[in-house]
Image 1 (cartoon, helix red, strand yellow):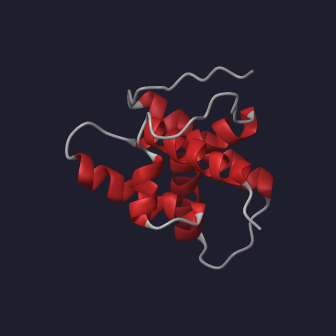
Image 2: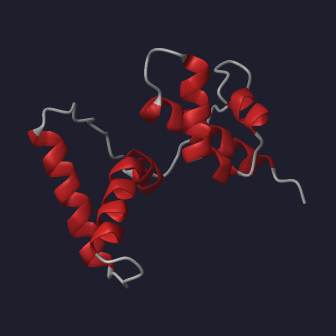
Image 3: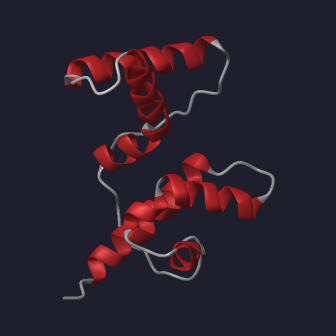
Length: 124
């Protein structure tokens, strides 16, 4: 059954992905990269994902994403890097959540040391 709140949630998450992972340059390439990495999990085709990114097309007034959704969306790249590093160490091993979280923190610390810009988030 169609639920408009689910559609609004998918649109809000798609726009959040754009704010976190869009890089200036070739916009078509960036949108495709974001879609292939994360947007496809929203249950939408690439064309629909591009429609979600149009700023004035959808009314999202009153729509506020939960803080844990915003934070986890911002951490998708470091989590992916941490999982790749863990898999490279021991393929097909079982990892506990504290071990994965420690690796994500190590990735974040390394990025900060390398001078990668640190994104600040407001938790409300």
